[in-house]
Length: 131
Ligand code: MYR
Image (cartoon, rainbow, N blue to C red; front, side, top):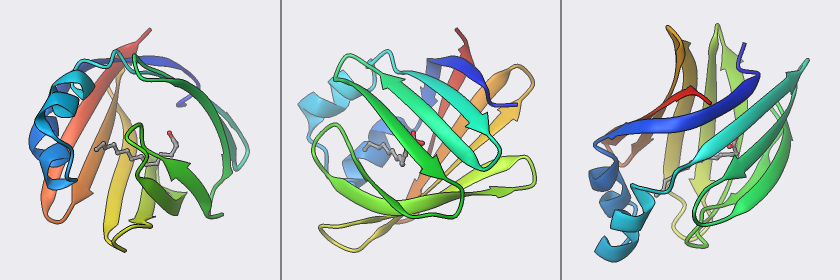
């Protein structure tokens, strides 16, 4: 189950990924130390997500398979949805500004939550521990 609060522990290739996303160096440096915490609460096919970082606090509700809008901390707007594939949550989001697609997954590996990101062939991970 995804249901708990997760605190980011480490990143893999996240700065390269953000660079591909067009985020400038100063913001990349800040974003790689954003102390992100996410609280996931799944009830059936509905999710409530609380996101807390040095940038902002926000709450998101979505239903598996149903598109919704989401803005990144720098204002980039995405639209897309999450689906469950086996034990993995898979998100497919499209940038509203350029139409390019960002794929992200969340899965539990051992006692960690691993979130992967893929954009224009660049892949990254953020690995979260139980908070
Ligand atoms: C959620 O479930 O947390 C809300 C929806 C998340 C949508 C996709 C997130 C992609 C984040 C990419 C961050 C990259 C910064 C350049």
